[in-house]
Length: 256
Image (cartoon, rainbow, N blue to C red; front, side):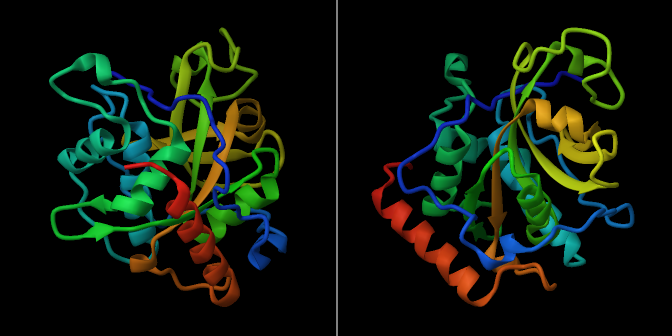
C-alpha cells in the first residue's frame, strides 16, 4: 500500500481557539487509557493516492467518536476528497494542487462549512493545545475521544513495526514529511510506553519518546452532534467558552 502524507508545517492564526482556559484541562490525565475493546474503525479514505490526511483525520475522528458512543458513522472516500478540495483547493483534475493542508485552516473550514457526509453535515468545535503539554494531550484523548495532531515523520518511520526514536535509519523529524494522525489511546506515560495512533486505515503503535520527537501541533476536536457521555467531556462553562472562541475566530478567519 502506498502511504501519502499531506500535513503542511504547523501555523498559528490570530485568535484561534485555545484549550488552556478550560476547567477540564486543569485535571490530571489518566495514567493509562486502553481501548482494546473498542474498534474506532479508521478508514484509508484516499490517503494512499493523495495527501488528504488532514481531511481523513477529521473523517476518522467522527468515526472514533461514534465508536466510543456504541455506534458508527459512514464516511466515504468521496466525502474525504470533497472536503480536502474544499479546505485546501485540491482539484482532482490538476494533480499539482495536491499540496496537503494546514491543520488550523482545515479545522476552521470544517467549523464554517461543515464536514459533509451523504446523510448529514458535521460541524466541529475545536481548540489548540501547546505541543509540549502532554497532560493536556492525554486529557484530549480521554475527554474528546482522540487528539487531532500533526507530526513530522522521519525516513526511519517508513519501516514496519512500532515507531520509536531508537529504531535504525534516518531519525531526523521531517525527513519523510508532515502527516496528520489521531492519538487514540496509551498504555502508560513512560517514554517507552506504547501509544496508539490512527492513520492509513489502521492502528499504528509508537512510543511517547517518538511522539515527543515528532509532534508539531495538537488540537482537540468535539462534535456537538455526537456528544459523548463521561466526566471528562466539556460541559457547561467549558462548552460555552469553546463555542464563543470558535464563533469569534470564524467571524475573523477567511477560510472556506
